[in-house]
Length: 488
Image (cartoon, rainbow, N blue to C red; front, side):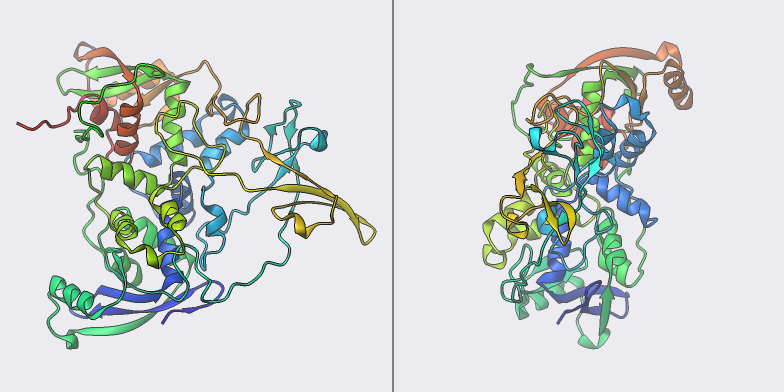
């Protein structure tokens, strides 16, 4: 049975002594909730947290996208907040994840910024400093959040995604199942464990660092539990198995055609002899799309990969499949299960062209209150007006990045018009002939072997770009030059 403290979760694992691998662990809903929360975390957050703990994330081009955002001059973004939104993206499920026993992203508290001049007039707030108010001034006045005294739920009512006191077993490749004798026997047969004497029971106490390591391992390994708990090291088999050759991504729909309305034009510089993209030149609309990949929750990425009949090297897709396969009775409600299978963007992270088809979550109610308490003037933001004196509060509206109204930000993250150079592995810089020449020189491609090609990016291409940015290090080649296989 899993024991819990404020900063750790304890559980027992059955280990194969001969191979020094985890057969399964036995735990309750608290640890399973933490694992399931992986699916709600934005890609940019995974990279940021992994770097913070010196855990390299080897997932296609994602690191290059994140580094490109870091390196691009803040003045090219519509506001400094737009850059922060990409480097520190928020989760659409963060309200639920605040109740997790172990919070991977606990080091980044939610912040609230208001305009110091016209809070009562426009009633806007932002989670990022210097987002522009309706009056045109930056919202730079930080107000603390008042949470009051939260009611404690009973163990039976507990749980974030799964019901409280529910028991599970978790295999080394993150398959989550209800415990039963038939499941254990089937697992022993699959792993060729014929004698219980070759196994041993070990106790573990995991903290945030170990859980984050499990997340990173799950992206590239089929044995994240063994690698994290037992420090078993498998042979590396990362996403760039076929470097610079591209991968074939199946179309999402058979016979579908590109929607010409709302497409984006991109110029490709192609090596004719090798049939690979050397680099591309495009405007801010295309780079807005690529940068928005950092705000995408991991679970949405996995779903897109499944829809395209592609597969991952790691075990994170097994975790996603476990959510699909578990009976609804194990979840607190169908809504909690849907949060994991179809995670949404945080409000305000909705890229304007909507090419990816991802939805954004609903805003929570927030209130600004100002009142006198014990001879001192108090200003707070609260999500529950019962925590502040009656008549002292006004409802707030979430303000996104630079926009002229309180609707979803359709302008993207970058100022325009701006042109960029984008390499095949999605290193992005403001357009530079010198950078383009250096790419050709590094690839040893002569000028006589290149040609230009204009392509259009619609919903189909955007979805394929998202998948390839996660699966390989030659995203542009995979999407625009590798033709999907057709049945003979």
